Amino acid sequence: MKITTQQLKQIIAEEIKRATLKEYVLDYGTGSAELQTMLDVVCDGWKSQFDPQDPSMDASGGKPAWEKQCDFACEVLGEKITELVMEIEEKLHRGEFG
Image 1 (cartoon, rainbow, N blue to C red):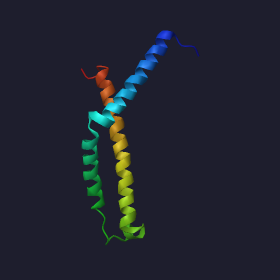
Image 2: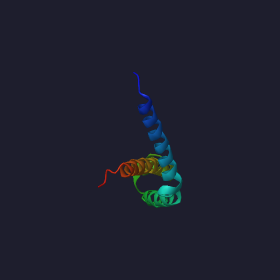
Image 3: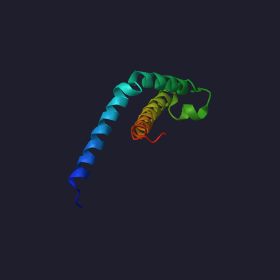
Image 4: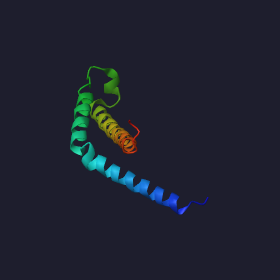
């Protein structure tokens, strides 16, 4: 498959923009501190749902296992939020909300 010089320039420009947006979102945009604070609140809420009286929770490894699951779930949530913010911001920069 051949591409023109113009197509190559466009691809490079889009990749630079994408990398810049990703850096912006992770470091400045939504604010990594603000995002982390929100995720901490969610994760703490999930962790507080551990019930030692629930046999299924105790049988699956108890509180340490539950907290590891919560931590992993929060990491996944953070990744998904970052992806969504980047997607929305790209659409915003392309003028798709008007």
